[in-house]
Length: 205
Image (cartoon, rainbow, N blue to C red; front, top):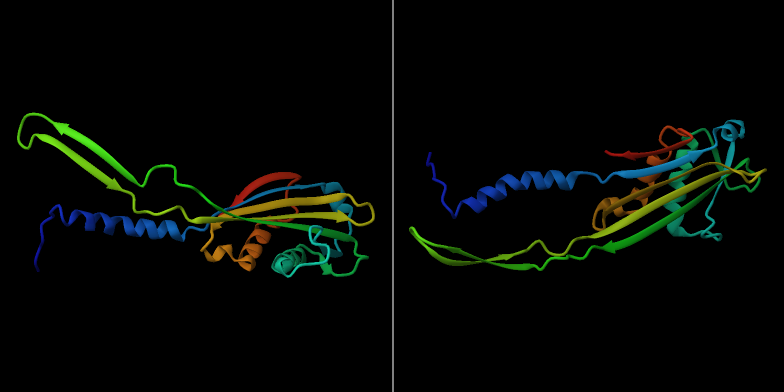
């Protein structure tokens, strides 16, 4: 077996080998989902948790883009004891609102930096110029997905429960897909339904 000594030329390769696993681990981390929700437990406990109609006030005529979100909310409501229906005579109405934004962060510092250093006396004295080039490229695009749900008693129109869940992910990540985002945000939003009268929490995988 040949043992090669460390040299200046091998140090960058060693640094890359040490950093690469950490980078992969960071990439594998799933961004958290932030949830805020409120409930009127008195009215909620008295309400009929039978049938519930899911409506989208922002798109009264319906939209295919919202279908993954409607399906995800319907699945969670079913697990919570409701019976989703398309009928307009249901005991409850669940209003869902979806917001999706794409954003790109701008790099503030220059991609090229120049440093000048000097030394006096001793071996190798002189002035040196160092040029550092940032090759990391521009920050990746981010996608913000937000799901809000309000459950109302149909007879009175009063809100008995409402909540909001949001998550920021890289635009090229599979988590940015509408169906995937809808399932994850809905699951986080309805965890341990109905929850406390007022609470804010974060869901991490």
